[in-house]
Length: 535
Image (cartoon, rainbow, N blue to C red; front, side, top):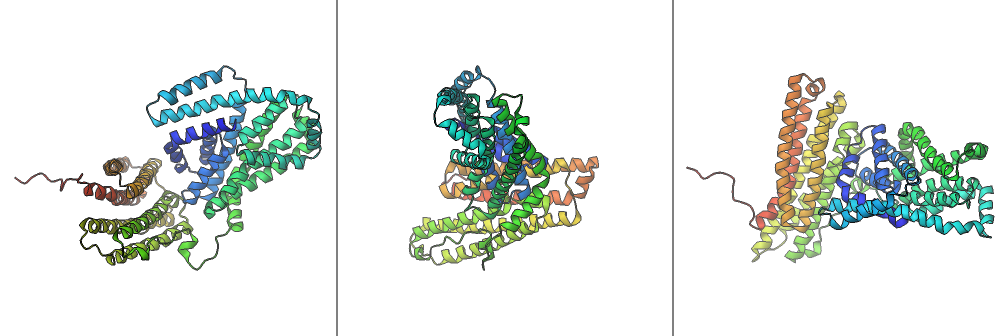
């Protein structure tokens, strides 16, 4: 069962990761964020995986802490729906899933089709594993030891709660843990009095894993996972108190499977309904409890890594160029961290995120200056190829500095104007900007890959993406002008903001694409100019 759940998760993530990340970037408001989380919980069949994805986005500042908590609450509800679906009697479905998934995986031409097949095979194997568990646990009803253990857990609900949390943490899957409890209850091995606190503990255990895994991550990720864990602990303790008062009345008239699956679903629905309006309160509490460590270096406090320039390599041109490339990759990563939360800053006008971006921009300026002085001290005499490579790396450093300037001096300034004047983009205009932002983020990742691999295919793709971006910006400009003609009030108020944002995004994308041009030029894959011969 654990392997099958893992197959579904990896198949969905590998095959549909761009769509999944696109959904996370499109979160807007608690209800939509919770809906996105529920969808991720259903698709990935793992609230842990959905939580880790949310933590990764939160650490890059792509949404606020309250938004991340809403996503995780929705993911927990989505995984509860998975348990409900898997507990149904669908005996004819597993063979269809296994055959269809196998054909897609072995005969599929694209990665997406193959990974979708993997997910279907995993889903089929979950049903098979449930049948195997059912057959294997049936004899446990005649065990001489188990009744005593079960009787003890029934009388010690707090111990059962902790045991359920430990099991789910070890399994790293609440779905597998709860389905195991369902199978044991189905055979009468585990009465509701013992199964209910174990189930509530499993809901805590599924939040312990992400909390532990993010202990060395950014402060935003730690706050998110700590808030999720605290929410589930408080909810589980409160639900256990309710059960101790009237568990027999609540469970009467239902089969063991219905009792446990219903309790799991009701718990997560209640947690979603109660917790969603309180995500802001929980976010502020986590910000008070988990503070950034004090340091004399403000840039280091927000996670800016130290310089990669190796002074000992100055005398060796090859090693010096490798060191410079590592430093450029660090610059590109910092630039990516600056740009990724831009739409969240536009939406919320978060002064802290603006302050962090400006600290990172100062680090970018310093890195560009350091690279320039570092390369000036390297002797390339007699090695024209290395000398040209050094010039190319210096040019990339200058372009990355310009990207930092475009973010802080244009995009962040526009975000402050929007906040101060309380302007709101039209829904269509906002969607256009969000899609363009997502496209630039993907191109930034591609540019970082090209910087490291110098792969000609990826470099050509990066240059082609520049053309696509230019066309997308032109299309957005046309649509914006049409909205102005139609008299759309929001577009009239935000016209300058919209057009300047488009220009800045186009500029940033072009500067990142220059990395692809330099790689292609070195390989002789770029024409000297685009002008027709003079007549």
